[in-house]
Length: 184
Image (tube, rainbow, N blue to C red; front, top):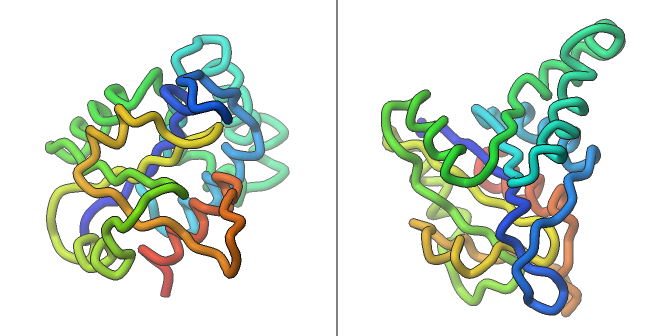
């Protein structure tokens, strides 16, 4: 089975007007995505942000459960947050994976606005075979910037709900995608 990694990208992402921005880090995203990563045996979850102070904030959220009171209070939360790595950008995440696996990952772009894309069944079949690691990219704000899509090896089909409203939180979308790729 191929190694699976995820990255929560905060820059470059789009704002509601389509402008490229850096979005804020939220503690809920870190906690919930780490728990999903642990549940679906994702090897590591990267939080990527270019601003040092926000990376320090993310580290404080993670570290709160890795040592001291948080470590003793909830060992399950600690087990999930052990998978969180905080990096400056996508390139640092790729370099980290290359260091762990000996090869660069294939990049999987996710978006609610994708037309078409690789099916979940097809990507799941790829993940079930021996091969290079995969890094699934999740964007904050209003999604990943086009420059990230251009770097992707695979563009994943969007999650489609029952109606025409399609604006899930990144936490919800990531959980659905991970379940489709790795769930029983």
